[in-house]
Amino acid sequence: MRKILGILFAFALAAQAQPLREAAKERGIRIGAAAASGYLNERDYTDALAGEFNQLQPENDLKWATVHPGRTAYNFKPADALVDFAQAHDMAVRGHTLLWHQSNPSWLEKGSWTSAELSEILSDHIRTVVSHYAGKLYGWDVVNEAFNDDGTLRESIWYNKPGIDLSGTGYIEQAFRWARAADAKALLFYNDYGAEGLNAKSDAVYRMVRDFRARGVPIDGVGLQAHFTKSGVSLSALESNIARLTALGLQVQITELDVRLPVNGAGRASDADLAVQAKLYGDLTRVCLKFALCTAVQTWGLTDKHSWIPGFFPGFGAGLPLDASYNRKPAHAAMRESLLKSPPSTPATVANAASYDTSAVAAGEIVTIFGANYGPATLADAQPDARVYFDGLPGPILYALVNQASVVVPAGVAGRRTTELTYEYRGLRSGPVTLQVAPSAPGIFTLDGSGAGQAAALNPDDSINSPANPAPRGSVVALFATGAGAGIELPVSANLGEILYAGAPPGQVEGLFQVNVRLAPGLSQGPANVILSVGPGRSQAGVTVSVK
Ligand code: G3I
Image (cartoon, rainbow, N blue to C red; front, side, top):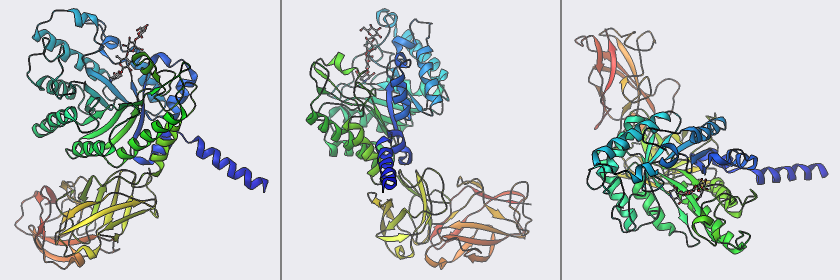
């Protein structure tokens, strides 16, 4: 008995001890904290930072005042220390921030610059700082807090005092373009506070980023700061706002979460207030997890010992998930609970597994669903915990991973105009997404899995067709595709020649069909564009078979 109790007790301890980053592992989401290089010599601080979080963002060390102390002087030391720390502890890093109206150095604030000079100063700053961290920071708050609460643009040195001589949001656009030029891979965010729900400011941010997306301005996401009081935010408004932003294909990240509470002389908040705070932390995390494109929840600091709140709001504090002695607060438990118990996200994209076409699905088609919390972090043989439903009909799961799953559209979907897909993992079900249904939706598998270029095809001798190993004209190549429709009953044809066989391949991988085509004798040598027609559907353009 004692032995059993010992084991149970050990389990209870293990569950209690699970850090946030552990709980976030299979969620496809990062859990971050703003951090300061000045505290890296504090053991409790570094233990908690690396123990609980898998992302950090320098709270102040990348602001102009620190990183760019003279017109031609840059100081990367403090931020480098944080980046080194992050790398040593397997943490991702976000940068903050390249353009802001605050924390600018006095050489900049006090100089009397022409717009041309300011433009040169800003482009030099963005180029120098972003390229210093290229490959080390995965994303940047390129522009911070450019809007007033009423949705008008905030006056600032960069916009109109005197500004870099670009009207409206032109200066913001320019900053994003310079950032992309300095690091083609970093994700570029616009970041603001008070724009979490639906209001004049979030409308203005939405209009700007929609315009940026429409015109191809390089922007990847929007940061919602989330500096809250006890009254928090309307969760339905927050959800609607994240929905409209992610519908543009943008990521959303919660970037500066804290919930300030009234505190006594010792810096303590009441238990009742801590419970309200915890609920807000949990709710916010849960709402973010509904969206595959809501990719991080980050708190503005980690411990109430070091927080901007008491200095800026006298009488308030206790805003973070760890108290001043690094004990976990109810907010920590609520976040962890949401990470562990929220359902998979609503599917972000449902695409043909071969072509990545997203226009419609067909019965029997293999589709890849992109989302979050869809499976384990690494590939496993069987997926007993994952299920997919089309109008309630289960479909076979081919594989399931944290951010994507491949499944087969069940035969029962044939003949419908639309179908509603839901995904289930570990007993919790995602929100639905409605898909168009077509009689067929053919896609040809390609050799590199990209959906374009050399087809995954076999030559007559069963060797893999490639530019180095082309098939002779007149010979028969085998192509592999999916999306032929229920039972592969529709007529199949190919532009490259006569079809000798169209049907299930040997081994019967569900959803896969094989087409043997005799390459027409008149084809010219080299890559030949191949198109399969199955009933009314045509396969994707840009796929080739190598011919000699
Ligand atoms: O480090 C100096 C210290 O040497 C000096 O004795 C002391 C005297 O005031 O100042 C210290 O610097 C302060 C710094 O925080 C570090 O504590 C600055 O004065 C102070 O202005 C600075 O405040 C920061 C503020 O941004 C302005 O940059 C806060 O820490 C930081 O939390 C806050 O973060 C902002 C985000 O960047 C944008 N969103 C809102 C958020 C909260 O205001």
